[in-house]
Image (cartoon, rainbow, N blue to C red; front, side):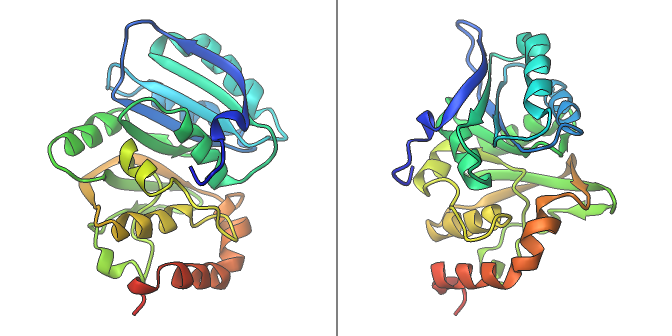
Length: 253
């Protein structure tokens, strides 16, 4: 994607594959300095009711023990997955690059995007996959339960491209059709990290694709002061709005 060879921009730290077992879904986890949260995140993926499942974790050169903890967990739990893969970027490259690296290694038709500090309830992937298999939506998403320093519910509004210019309606935690992500070129490298998912909704809306809401609480969104949103994104909101308006002017008329 975008003339970058994501396949070769990361080192393989751990890999496991079962023969003659195919999965519909891959969970792609982006990881950076979340040694405190990654194991709980992985356990929530392991607990999914969907039987055959692939897992890809891409670390963006964490400075803590995130990679060590993840590798040890995968070694002990590899039999749960048809395929599992731990990669590490050759240099710190940011969220979009990390997600695109995972996408470049994804072999299934469906891919779920997950950050290492968030969690899934056991029926999450089963319900979201069922929704996509029963319509022609490009992605499916659920209500998210906020926990941590704040509580509440996210993703309550249905997909509406007419309102994209007002607010980001959906978190990145959704199940995508892989071919649609590839069609729009994956995640964009933006001037500031944090709105990669918001940018993606504009790209998807631009090709007249759409998302379907599953009105159930199927995942948990951690709110905490150390998040990228609070540390990097929020202080640069004006720069991000300018980027979106210049890149997708037809939505801001």
